[in-house]
Image 1 (cartoon, rainbow, N blue to C red):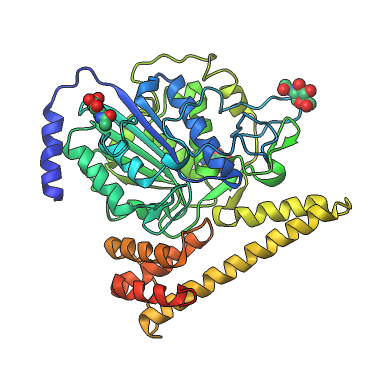
Image 2: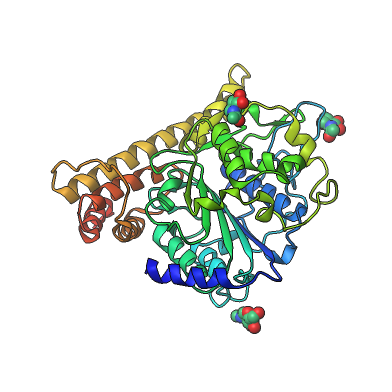
Length: 442
Ligand SMILES: *[C@@H]1O[C@H](CO)[C@@H](O)[C@H](O)[C@H]1NC(C)=O
Ligand SMILES: *[C@@H]1O[C@H](CO)[C@@H](O)[C@H](O)[C@H]1NC(C)=O
Ligand SMILES: *[C@@H]1O[C@H](CO)[C@@H](O)[C@H](O)[C@H]1NC(C)=O
């Protein structure tokens, strides 16, 4: 398979490059005000690529889009990806942010179809129409687990399906070079051992295959002109590349490798990784996050204030993506101490207790699934590169069917399924265990 891919790639190289264009696919995989940050990250990325010359019809943005109109949003109609001091207006990334897919249309099937240029699956909604002359930029922000990233509606995207979609793009001449930036917990596992080195794809991830990624500008750091947003404004790896790209002098000089070095250094809570065709590292970021040869234009719909706000020095702390809900609830609760607002305090105490109970329940369920699958035999921990992606997809699908969908926290236990798969337990055995553990009144 890889050999065939290599031949197709070499044929692609021989072609002369005339009429090159740029394309971008930008996607947030979550929903809810609690995940404000992903929706702000992707609208910010939309501003970067539009400001730098990728035409609207070549940008496919997918975002559930419910944070901006949430009753919890203190600035209805606006989204901010960076805090500002009192007296300084924030940079509203929702302005002119124009998604092609929103709400329940943001699914794994649609995302993969967009990449493959398959508008039958998307029922005519926009898909990539790029050619082998073109450069494609893909950016994904959300939660993840070993070998999968979540979607706001329906099934997650599994690593093998993503790699198959990229292979389809290569085989069908849908790009000259492709850059993929991915923010998610354990995002390294989406490419590690899977992405070939000769496919002209340069991928970077917020985290390695064994760790969380981190939200930033959370709690008391989420203040925009004196008003607390009450949800994290961004993700650490994402805002690091986005704020760097907002600076015109950087945008027009940096290479993929120099931006990666900067982002890796500033993303201090996790270990950003790169995969694929690393020789592309000398390519310029403006060839992907913008349109080749497009001049720097400050101001206008996608420009004014972006650089100015990016330049405001703001410390970036990180909160483990899986702990953000609890962190948020506890922060809100701490704000109520001594205010006498007992109704709200009781409500928050109840939500904190529910979150703790959910965590305890998840630990118990996945512990039991593991024990039942192995018949109590000790299961060796997952070390090295995970390879059993088909087993994982089948096991995860079975767990969703029997135990309900993954949530932002329970995704941490995808690892326990991956561990069983890597130890050689067949997916059918994991399925039977999940059915037995999660069966309700039978
Ligand atoms: C900041 O907020 C204050 C109080 O709401 C408002 O009066 C002021 O116009 C805002 N400043 C900017 C620059 O948006
Ligand atoms: C898919 O795109 C092609 C080419 O633009 C178009 O002719 C066709 O009608 C589209 N299919 C659907 C289902 O909209
Ligand atoms: C890495 O980050 C630290 C802290 O943010 C900064 O002081 C240092 O200059 C950075 N180094 C490079 C090479 O960017």
